[in-house]
Length: 242
Image 1 (cartoon, rainbow, N blue to C red):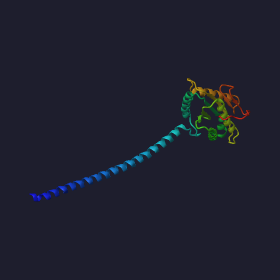
Image 2: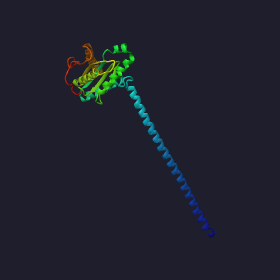
Image 3: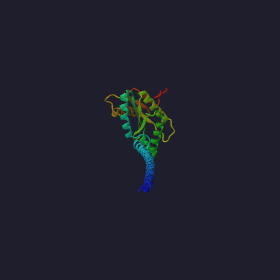
Image 4: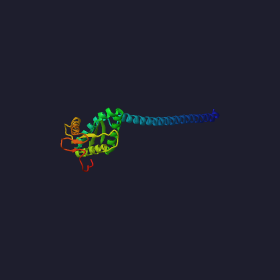
């Protein structure tokens, strides 16, 4: 039997070699499969990232649409309510003044009755654009409060600053060449919010000032409390930067 030993060893070596080759083939197949899976995973991750970015853009657009007044292009009443709440909390925490200005287009019903509602819509767009051009600080927000009325939320702004900005807006509109010609009245209120201060308080006081401007002839700026700051077309002097 000794003469069979060489064949036995040859068989063992051959078997080991075949096993090694088969193992190598399996390893190569596994590596190829792993590489393909990794490539697919990267592709899916890239596609997922694109989908997430597109979703974020759509959500941002949707949020803008829900916050924006369709006619004027400025923030709407719902945004005003949320923003006033947020600014009240921040101003109270930081102990800084918060100002609210209500601006109303004078005799707007006559514009609609005389020139038609399309002309009235154009007036609202023009006035909104003019106001927005004069609002310089990123934190200041212009909202359409309702109908022909706008609201300016002015963080860290005292009563003089709010009244001066309102007067700049009034003067700009009064001297514009837009047709039909319109003017506006404004009511201003500013205070450091107390523990009991809320949106209704600011709206109430700014509205009282606006009512006073209307009652005293329109095309002017009034502030609350009465007598604190009154700006009419006859007022002269340089306005300070708000």
